[in-house]
Image (cartoon, rainbow, N blue to C red; front, side, top):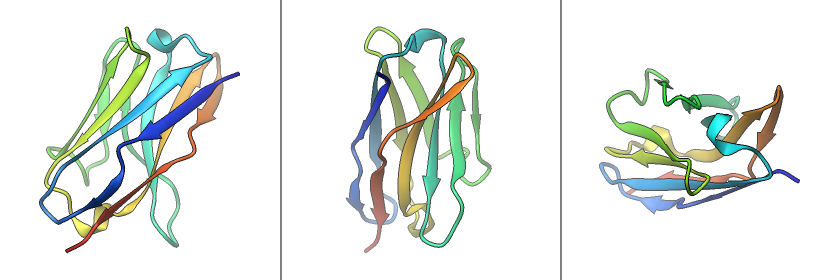
Length: 115
């Protein structure tokens, strides 16, 4: 079965950095379109960043220049490097995989930006 396991969340001060990881299994990772989404309390889930199998990336305007999405196809792992974090980045971050026209989700990891 498909499994997406996120890690790397936590509490960080404004201006700090975190790197999220998502370990994937049960899919052909190298051809899957991968993405990071987030959901803050009382808000809808939103796309943060996406990366296609060929490496093309896209970002939400709110994170451009601060976040970097990347993938290691040899390790079946997706990353999100988050720099210059702001309190409004506080949310549960979810890994998503699009594989053979189906969408799969991880369980989420909490990111809290607070002093």
